[in-house]
Length: 154
Image 1 (cartoon, one colour):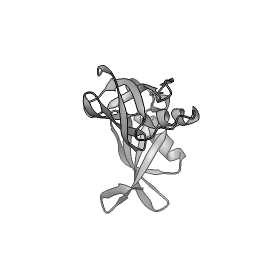
Image 2 (cartoon, rainbow, N blue to C red; image 1 turned 180 degrees about the vertical axis):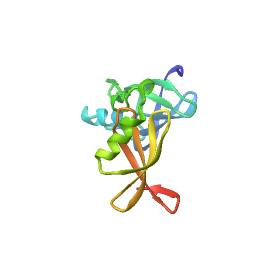
Image 3 (cartoon, one colour; image 1 turned 30 degrees about the vertical axis):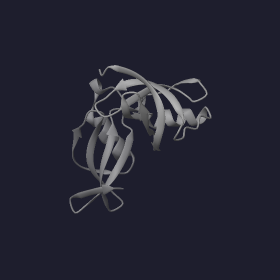
Image 4 (spheres, one colour; image 1 turned 120 degrees about the horizontal axis):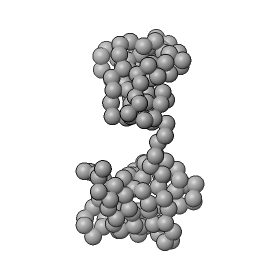
């Protein structure tokens, strides 16, 4: 597990569920995650460039995965990080992923390729060819259209 890190500073850019923070150590990227951004929005926390915040989270090579943020008003908010729909990696069963695709109307082409958090599976549906990402719990996370052997976001 990566070490925990806490820092504070001023937001200088926001994009999606990430923000760039100017802090005493320099500029750092902070990942709130989609769930974290949604949780802050539900709590009526609106962040913008120029806001002074503090953040605590797991230090990754290129960013901090936030677990808590102190908003400009001084209120500390927990950032949800768990994704129970991912399932247990120790119990990853490709049959569950294949069954999820079949139940959703896909015809599976080939075998499930295991990745750290999901299976990648080639499948067909409605005349299209797709690469599907299916979690270990059998949730179809996303699909990419495959065209002439190349993939493009679908």
